[in-house]
Length: 193
Length: 215
Image 1 (tube, rainbow over the protein chains, first blue to last red):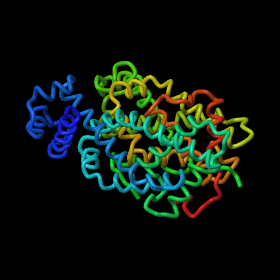
Image 2 (cartoon, chains in turn cyan, green):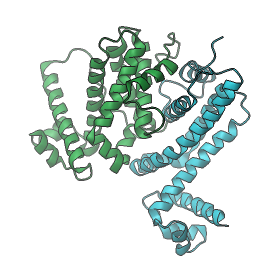
Image 3 (tube, rainbow over the protein chains, first blue to last red):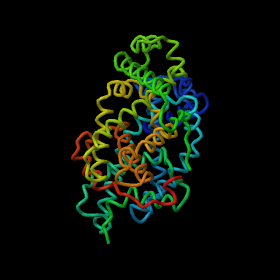
Image 4 (tube, helix red, strand yellow):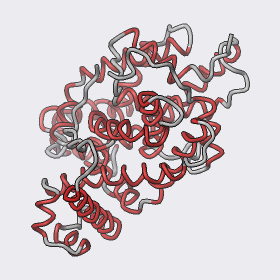
């Protein structure tokens, strides 16, 4: 029940941000759209407007990365998972109209909030990669002498870096993407045959 | 290609040897940028006025508007570019005597990370007004930084590899350092040279020049 209400508030807040932008969204707007009273918002978010907006961005970022995780669930190994994550993440990022609009209209506000969310997301990504690396070591594909925590931390940060700005790499091009993953992510850690 | 617009790229530097007039303008730009950074470190970006910067730089307001147009955004773009130049100069000193490109890359990572960590202005911005600086380091806003790094990388790594490969090495350094700057913490301390060496030895490879190297 409580979780349902929070999700409803997040969805309403996101719709308000989509309609009016971050700066113009008020607690009253969110409450009206969520069909709850202002008191309910403050009961769930004692920090008020600032907290509900901040947690809404984190919620949306969480959903974004959950969709990537779902897309790569069946990928057979870490190489394929990173490749698939660039496909799913790159596509979702390109299609995220609200993010693009906020980056154009309120870059300071949205990037400040995204920075908070990214801290949390990085932890999740690093934990995910760390588990995958353990599987890769057991499968004999990744060097057994690898420091998995260091490797997962590095690969997680690098993934976020290339997802946010691929630089010279075209992530929609299968050949370039494969070369990026092979040379920048996997080359140093794969067992040399 | 994914493209997420944040800021337009800053003007790229003119190529070729600078004239004395260009050097004077460059010195003045550096002085104003340095003054701007001192003001941010002292009172925060939000409380820094053009008058404050002019006073710190010892020049007139009109000079700032003339040398670095664009108000606060113009000053921030110029300060980011200036800071990049300072970091590359520090890295150039740090890589002297490196026997291999891996050692040069490790020293560059450590020097860049330490310089950013020691920047009172940057640390204050990240702590108090992250939204002011992140547009220059995120999504498409990062592109000018990557271009500048690629331009300057041969200065650091050109004696070991081709210019294109040096550009790749510089980009690798930039992505690693900025990845930690935006999200500090974790098991890797980039201000520790031994950590940097381990990271570089594990993950940094020189790739043969590919069709995508100079896109």
